[in-house]
Length: 320
Ligand SMILES: Cc1ncc(C[n+]2csc(CCOP(=O)(O)OP(=O)(O)O)c2C)c(N)n1
Ligand SMILES: [Mg+2]
Image 1: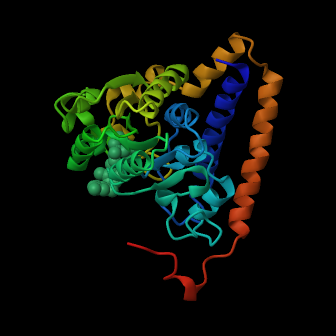
Image 2: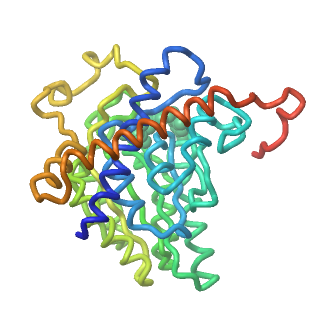
């Protein structure tokens, strides 16, 4: 991979990581009046998928949405302002963390309804096909969405019409506090599309390069007119299901999730790789990180200083 691409990946990974660490740091102040679902540990999937997309391609996301929004190029200030429920937020303060949207960069929205955004992506892909556009739609969802019937209806329709849609499952083995093993008879989620004759793969989502490569292949496949593709990324959710802090962790986590030796960091692994390959050096990475810190501080300041929506406007910009 080219040097610039590797640095772009590093920048995007660190941007998501640092933004979420800052959210976590400030969340206890209770100024962000929104639930938050942090994707710390899962950053490689957002980056690997979105950096293979064009600006005009569309993504559809779920409640764990910050990484998807940022990697697709969503405006950072507008995202943080949305978390503070301010008028300058990307959903004008009406949506909060689970309803991020930035149509200018092809992020057509997150939905808090588990599996809710899957048929939206299929609909977008149908539109591309009817309009003869060579665009791709991607839908991100978690392992709990595999328990929703609409996923299988979407597989069926996408295959029937040979639509350019890539289904991306981030399998972190949890639905809130319920382990996958308590909900499904096996963990081979990638096999679920095979009954519809949709090709699929299970990928180590903690491995940045593998994630990028498999996402590229799936997106190229869909763009070339061959039809839908399904990717399951196995990832680690480092934090609580929602909020900041995981006081219940000991009660519901698998032993291996609590074993420090088994916890992996996709960013650390990737950083070690680019340093070992002499793609960059520590000084250059420090500069990237300092610039990110400044950008993120400015975004929080902007959000904190932005006005709340006016009382008389509260019923505007809503739809159902
Ligand atoms: C249709 C529906 N059922 C239940 C919920 C409550 N709920 C919110 S998040 C969640 C678990 C989601 O787990 P998963 O899809 O694996 O994503 P993760 O949180 O692990 O990223 C549930 C059950 C919901 N939002 N929507
Ligand atoms: Mg999950």
